Image (cartoon, rainbow, N blue to C red; front, top):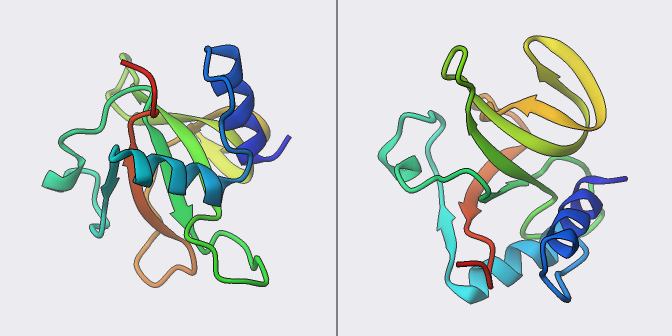
Length: 133
């Protein structure tokens, strides 16, 4: 299951009738609904992350060569901060992300880290799930 498929599955299982299937379409869905928070910073302590809540959708661009210009190429869900150490966590599907410094592939929990400056990938923002209160 790819990242957008994992997001699609969770949304369907939680009552969203027709969620978009691709990460680009999921991003556009949230943006058009007015729930998207754009982020330009490279540090999770930046003020633009002040509204980030567990359950929010997370979006990246440039995570792979899509062969065309897409607004988002990766999506996951923010879980919140671990009770044990306060580190931010996310859940979704990925190849090669890490959890507690161990590589994980597929659907799993991962450390929520922003790409390093100069990386091809870029975190572009987060959004509340449209249609959920």
